[in-house]
Amino acid sequence: MTLKKKNLNKEDYIPNLAFDSVIFGFNGKKLKILVLEYRNTGLYALPGGFVRRNENLEEAVKKGVSERTGLKNIYLEQFQTFGDVKRFDPEPMKRILEMNGLDIASHGWLLDRFITVAYYALINFEKVIPKPDPLSDGIDWYSLDELPPLMMDHQQIIEKALETLRENLDKKLLGMNLLPKKFTMKELQQVYEAITGTSFNRSGFQRKMLSANTLLRHEKRFSGNSHKAPYLYSFKPNPFDNRLKPYIGDKSELR
Amino acid sequence: MTLKKKNLNKEDYIPNLAFDSVIFGFNGKKLKILVLEYRNTGLYALPGGFVRRNENLEEAVKKGVSERTGLKNIYLEQFQTFGDVKRFDPEPMKRILEMNGLDIASHGWLLDRFITVAYYALINFEKVIPKPDPLSDGIDWYSLDELPPLMMDHQQIIEKALETLRENLDKKLLGMNLLPKKFTMKELQQVYEAITGTSFNRSGFQRKMLSANTLLRHEKRFSGNSHKAPYLYSFKPNPFDNRLKPYIGDKSELR
Image (tube, rainbow over the protein chains, first blue to last red):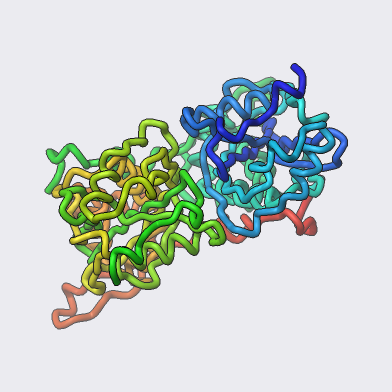
């Protein structure tokens, strides 16, 4: 695909609106983030894009992230829209256009203020190989403590994504299939350590987890040495979940 | 204020972007929603607005909601951005412009597709008196089971707001000061019943709440008849909260 084909015509897109994605890669032990490097600019950014006038926001995000990263069928969750005026900074985009031989006159709309809708995803970085789009010369997984300096407010977007991920970690772990239905205390601890970025003392972690009363204990996971076999656990369902159905439009359950 | 002053000039605003607010009113027992009625149109809508080119999204929302509802200093939380193409429907907006004597030619941008950033708030409806803006002839609190038919996808926006509110209700109750720090089981049950829209059996509710192990029991609340005095409870802090600090930029805590 030539760069010409990637020309972004103002008429085709909703102006002033972008999306960005924080793609967390996790292999059960380590948490990384997918970052793009723009060709010949030294500029690093989250994979993002724009929304066509006749396209649903969610479709644009799904297609855009897949094009820019080469990753297919990622489940992305919207977490926040960033709309501060100070996000506005035309300089990085100017450099990206220049270094890619795209003329600034016909891409002026890209230098205007943008409000961005941010999404995150959590996938296993061992199972996918990202491929960059034509405007980027690199895409790679970075550990949280080795992130390059990012464009605009992308660092802040990552921080908010992490905050969201850490809230109700137990619910998300299940939802995103990061843990099997039944898991050992050690597996659970590894996930918490990677995502919270701290290490826990083994017995302290176990005590806190059990006192939170959200785990069910099952049979042991048998391997070679059976008296060392660890117990398996699962998350308890929330006792109120089955009562919390929306009741708009169904008044039969109302008082 | 005359309607003329409310003219919305295309040049002043970010095109194709709006915001909407779901303002829940709650008095400890009943949950209501604030709905606007547009003058002479029979159209009902959530209070919303647009973002000026030189204005932060959050500022616009804060100012807009306060102007349209007359309510000051409400804490609004962003929960989702709605961007489906099928939200687009110019007819209601045409009627609103016509019935208010605003010419369509110079307000054509208002008839285009809009992506909306949605916010919600939870306030005590007994403590505030809403006042509509000049384009609306009514603003009122409606019970969830007596909502009028709403414009566009506003019903869906309310459903999503409710879903968000119901997730982690205990955390939100504290954050939004819906309950005092210490409360009785009956007060807690009233809040759950109003927000989930179902009624619970008293002893079943108490059993579930205690089994979830998120409450701390304190002294009794003494009133006249001391042996009938109910116990006071508070929410336990999440045992991991103090370990879940963001660690970007502070690597001292890293492994």
